[in-house]
Amino acid sequence: MKDSPRHFLDPLDLVKLRDVMNLTSGRSEIIVGLIDGPVAIGMPNLPSKNIREVPGPVSGKCASGSSAACAHGTLVASILAAERGSAAPAICPSCTLLLRPIFEETTSDTHADPAQSAPTATPGKLAEAIVDCIRYGARVINLSAALAGPALNNARELEQALDFAAIKGVVIVAAAGNQAAVGSSIITRHPWVIPVAACDTWGRPLHYSNLGSSIAKRGVSAPGENVLSLSSDGKPRTFAGTSAAAPFVTGTIALLWSEFPNAAASEIVLSVTQAQKRRRTSIVPPLLDALGSYRSIQTKSSSAFRTRYQ
Image (cartoon, rainbow, N blue to C red; front, side, top):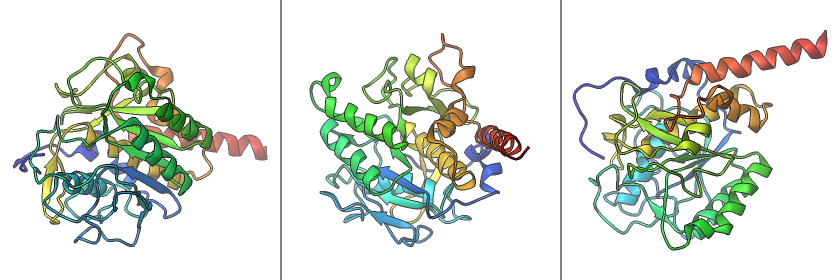
């Protein structure tokens, strides 16, 4: 996280999301799970009317607005749920935002480097949060947490939680990470997860964004540089990294489901990732095309309607 620059390209236009946002602000029955830090609920331009909390070990509401946990959670939440017309992208404010924090307010370092600012969680705690969000009705879950702890490759509990999401048709969108690594994690290589890499204002991958074959095969790139959102005091602040990129994808999915509530989860995932068009040799995922995803589902829906009533 860093101070706002004077000039930058609009990330919504970069991924053709504004065109979809002009059609809808979402529907309250579409529940977006946010697994992150606590959020400054009720601050200016982030009203509480469409925000719910999952009872858990960490409160969904910030206890200290100066903590890194609160800052991170609020920045991500504002990209999704801030009021239209505010400084934040405010992608799907009419959807219901379901808060399930996984990290506590233990530090006041709100100016952390973007490569270090993502929350960390053990596989077990992350698995519990995913299952909780599913049980409380989430249709899509935004996950911006790095894994911590030993034996990550053997974290069967987390794999089972991701499998549970697939069975229930709950889409998992996960930040790819900011370690400048080429490879995968237990999260990004799971076949049901949409990993999100971060790109600059021209659509080029950021130097610190994790990349890899599984990320390129099933993921997308989204804006992760100079993303203007709202800090925990309600003031505009830029956000960077894959944590900033992930909610652009999550918000797109929420809007698609708002417009096409009967679409299957697999159809939503395919429309966003366009996996059938991938170059299998690449380690860089394609740029999110929200309008293209909308048109893809619209075409299939129209075709299904004609077939049914001919």
